[in-house]
Length: 209
Ligand code: AMP
Image (cartoon, rainbow, N blue to C red):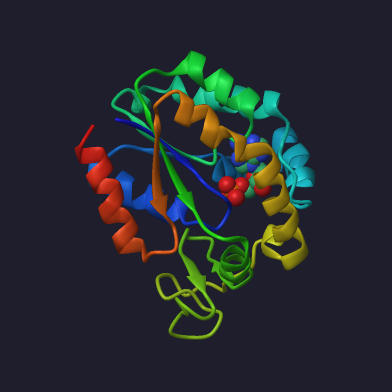
């Protein structure tokens, strides 16, 4: 089972990718997580990526295509996977067509104002948990319920960077909706529903494959 999740930042792709990964026991590949890990480790690739990420810009295609090629060649990807955050440009989508066959693309969409509300209130923990100051607050302000560490805000979740990421999404990534619709690969779900409802729809899509 190969699933590509498409949608603006903040639409819930990461959350749904985790749910799908758990239910169907296939790995999730989040290019954002891979780049953040590289940035955190201070590798040359990570340092380069961080400059783009902090400005809300896309990391160049050749970097991402190389990264995804390497990842998809891993043994653990044989049974399938979920791509979260790749492809984000037409060049990436075309490269992916050459790498994999028989996949479904699920688009999760959400209006811009809702995205800004969600992302500017998002708080993360280094253990991978994520919260929202209004809708999913931790029991103790600023502290992770699961591991007790201090929560932080991603540098690119500041409002001016969010607006830039949204502009980039609408310009560079949204054309992929048509790319996949034309090829008969696209399914659409409404990201404004709760996470359980969205996951229910995704289960329906996966079940019908
Ligand atoms: P995400 O966690 O998916 O929101 O990604 C965070 C940031 O990583 C993005 O704003 C981009 O700067 C970079 N990034 C992640 N995936 C890609 C991609 N497929 N192409 C280019 N840049 C990417």
